[in-house]
Image (cartoon, rainbow, N blue to C red; front, side):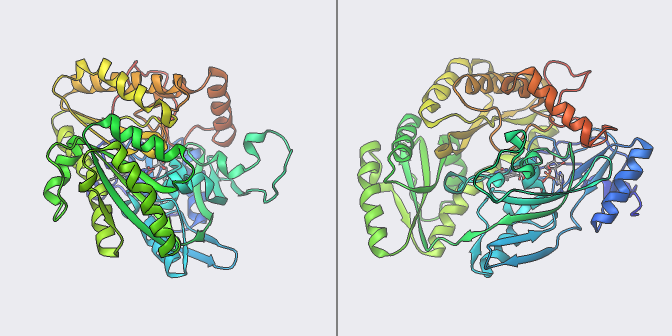
Length: 469
Ligand SMILES: Cc1cc2nc3c(=O)[nH]c(=O)nc-3n(C[C@H](O)[C@H](O)[C@H](O)COP(=O)(O)OP(=O)(O)OC[C@H]3O[C@@H](n4cnc5c(N)ncnc54)[C@H](O)[C@@H]3O)c2cc1C
């Protein structure tokens, strides 16, 4: 069995997530194989030592950081086992970096669709454990739609081999488990360790153009998004939103893109097409819609060459990295970035943005950066809390918005997961017996309660606002 690493210099590197949240832990395991994972789990059960699995710690909820016990990094289990082009199926180990895997699949002429912005800094295992999604999830859905099979080492050290049934019809027990892999998607390390993943692949889109459109206010950007989403003629692969603060963040990077000084919002969208006539068809569809919703239609940029597309993509994706850098700065002053992760049906977006204006008073001059997956009804509001007091205020605004989202048919977390920061919000989403059933399931798979303590469920001694560690 791999020995536990105790070297403080090595440990320091595994004790911080992308937000800069730190935890408390005694040591680190870095297994190279499933057999080693089994040995480590069994030994931890006998020693009553908790174990928190880690991918690359890009989680934004403290989920990968230990509350106690030891960390189990899957980074060495990063092999690409097989790409079966004919069946459009790939098998991988959990520690493979998402962008490396996507590149290998593309070289084989296919696509693995889930595309979180963090593709270069996250693993497939982490994606499964958080049901990661990205801008193209608007068209292709989240990780859960792409997982076909999993091997799991549960909290007792037993291996479970799970395959989703391939039939359209099924009636064998509880419907929620007809695709048993789905039980482990979003489990955030609490039920066991994902040691092998089988995913579906799809065709690469023939072609794609990218557009960025500027708006004088957020309302117009939402109206534009709603109309494009509810009219089936438009088939955007992604519709991403940046607010005015984001426009200021990207302005120095814009290089050749004129951002109108009076713009208060931007939508980045992607449209796939097969041939030139289809491209013309889509352009003729998008331009009247753009003209209808913004006086800045002449400032619209359409990119079709790989270089131009990359520039627009990079501009959109620059914002989250920059925001997380800000988070690391405010953590040093006792604060933290608190981000919403709620989602609502598109036609309720105006109500959530309006509600925010009603309740934002206590934030005073705290920096608020809003961006994200508007096409999926899922923008992130990021509050840059500079002190512990501001963290409490921002957490309360986050909780109020999550409550409102659920009351409007939405959810408290659409992609980052519950982790440690949002465990109070689980009860906003589900009735107590359903949370009880989740805990009973955890007890069955992890009877010693060693797996990822502090993730998803409240601790007995939690105060009312669980803050970053
Ligand atoms: C700049 C930036 C942009 C981001 N953009 C997106 C985005 O667009 N969409 C999105 O969904 N997320 C996004 N994220 C969040 C993050 O990248 C995802 O949650 C990602 O899936 C985490 O992967 P990871 O390998 O870093 O996992 P970690 O952060 O290390 O772990 C996340 C959780 O998974 C568990 N886990 C990890 N590996 C395993 C395993 N093998 N078995 C069992 N449990 C495991 C951990 O215990 C933890 O609970 C972003 C993060 C950053 C920093």
